[in-house]
Structures are given as C-alpha cells and as structure tokens.
Amino acid sequence: MPTPRTAPARWGGKFGVATLPGLDGPGKSSLGGLDLAISKFAKHKATALDFIKFFSNEENARTNLKVTSAAPPYTDLYDDPALRKQFPYLDTLKQSLATATPRPVVVHYGDATAAIQESASAALSGSTPVDTALADMQKQLSAAIAEK
Image (cartoon, rainbow, N blue to C red; front, side, top):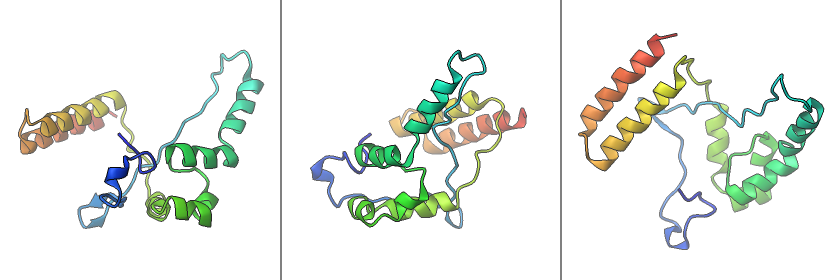
C-alpha cells in the first residue's frame, strides 16, 4: 500500500491522515515497534548491540521517515519544522502516539491476527456479509483472549 510519501501524484489532496475512530470520539492506537533484540545464543552480542544502536539512532530515524514515511520513535522529530512541512501528518501521528496503549495480552497472538485478517478479507472481498464477518471476528478474538 502506498504511504503518504510514495502515493501516486494523482492522489494528491484526495486523502489525509486521522486518528483511529473510537466508539465515543477518537480511538486509541496500540504501541508497538521494531522489537530489536539480541538472542542469548548470539555469538557476537556486542556487535549486535552496536548495530541496534546504529540502526535505531535519531539520524537514521530521520532518514527512515524521509524514505518510508514511517512514524519516527523520537519525539523531537515530530516537532522539527522542516519535517512537519514535508510530512504534515506528523502532528496527527504525535497525538495518536501520545494516547496510545499497550496491545492487549494475547497468548495466541497468531490466532488473533489470523482472525482479524481473515474476517476483514472476507468482508472486503464480499464473500461474507460485513455483519457476519464482524461477528465471526469477535467470536474468534474473544476465544483467543480468553486463553490467557
């Protein structure tokens, strides 16, 4: 899917970025990230740590934003005037991240992900009525969450 930075020119001015909708106003985003880690079995832990520090530093986060339009992990970048001019949606992302919450604990995360993907796909493709797809998704998600 094209990002705001790579979207075709013909899309100019035809879409925007908004916070997730909620039941009674703006919804909540979920926290997540690159989850960079070092295996306890790694032979070169120090080198891996050096790479993680390099890969995730502010300069590379700035470059990543410019190249991929990805939300940066550094709050200073959201307030940078040049970046805000180039990426006007940064204020919306900053607000969304400021109110984000941790993902719910789900032991069977793969099952929850599959339930969302399969139900959404079925509804979007028209192979399942939207109300049925949502009911199926809710049933599968409730089962996945219940297995803590």
